[in-house]
Length: 123
Image (cartoon, rainbow, N blue to C red; front, side, top):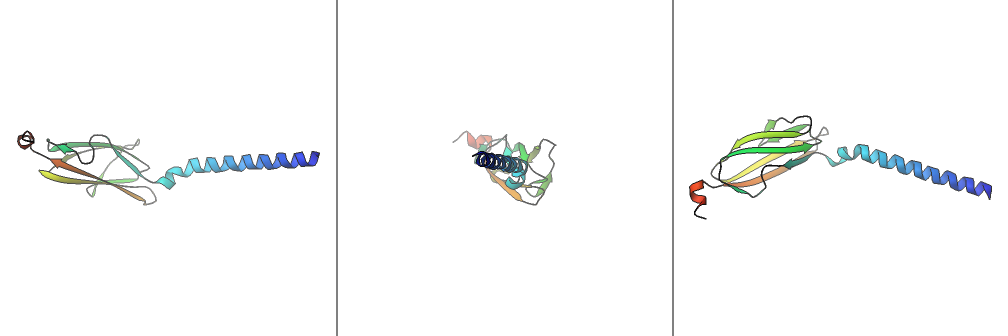
């Protein structure tokens, strides 16, 4: 009976140890598995705007390289970025691409409509 209790105790401790090891390993590597993320704070996809000057502000996670319409933009250590754009009249597509350090790429497209203030009052 005593040997059986010791065996069960050892098995239980091994299960707890390997479970802890698996959870710890996942928590340290989940950002590598997930890849880069992009979040835009100032504007939403599909929005109609009347000002051609757009100040795009957002945050990225796990990003090593970030581009806006295939032009490199810089991020701070917290992952924040800010860029100014001049929109064309009508339909505009803004493409933001983020790559992590393993070259895994994430892309976010913003589709915006610029209406001049004169025409927007008619709608």
